Amino acid sequence: MLMKEYRICMPLTLEEYRIGQLYMISKHSCEQSDGGDGVQVVKNEPDVHPQYGRGQLTEKRIYLNSKLPSWAKALVPRFFYVTEKAWNFYPYTITEYSVSFLPRFNIRIETRFENNNGSNDNVFGDSPTPAGSVTFLDILSDPIPDKHYKETEDLSRWQSRKTGRGPLEKGWREQQVPIMCSYKRVQCSFEVYGFQTKTEEFIHKNIRDILLVGHRQAVAWLDEWHGLSMEEVREYERTMQDKTNCKVKSNQNAGPPAGARPALSRSISVTDELSLMKMGLTTPTMSMPCDSSVPQSPMRLNSTPE
Image 1 (tube, helix red, strand yellow):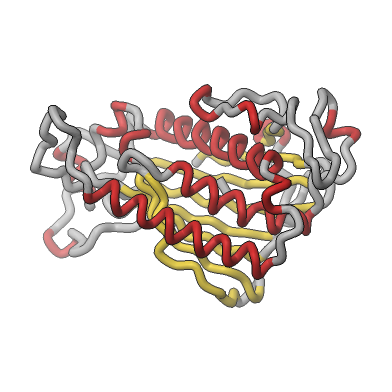
Image 2: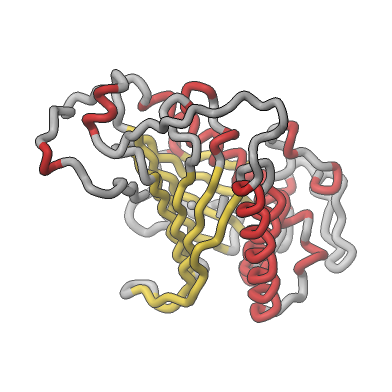
């Protein structure tokens, strides 16, 4: 299992980011839902956790087949999605991911938000994260994929009309007021021989990119959401979810483009270890299952860019 802790600072207060986070996730999800990929919201409702109290439970289906590298596409069926379940007990959240067809894979992300510049080395209260596993992500200077770059979201050029904040300059994390930090402890594993290291590195690279892009947008869009009440941002969230779901369904219902090569009609089943063995994948503990051990429904994996 590969575990890392990411720390992302922002020129916001803890209460401001509570609104900005909801706005950013809703708008970002809608923007990214295109070309057959996208985020479909299945559930978004109040929830009570026995330890953390009242919060919000959100369940989403994330379609991203076209974004996978070629080696990963060989392992997945044509219609592929990840299920995301997030429990928001702000300023603490838990996010778990499951894949219906792929065993021995899990991702879990714990997030805690604090009004500081990332200086808390034991933010989760159990044990300090080893220094070698901590990565500071700088929303100003860390590179993002070229396809995600927008001049309006470049924080070296950004300035908020409502608050007067910005643009950010080198060393801003040591001087900025207000400032807050999003601490994210990410644990992921993919225990399939020959694919574990490559897959875990791929997951963390994508998580890093998602975190950078999302947090840059939360700041760059400050003037769009600053001053909204919780009721107003929840209404915006519902509106954007309806719009996003319509885009995803429309993309899925549309046929392949004219002249496109027809897709294979047979899908690969990898709901159990026997299927993986047929594909030539083995793990140290893999054995031939008896009939009664083969699940009758797809297996789900339990494992956070909020």
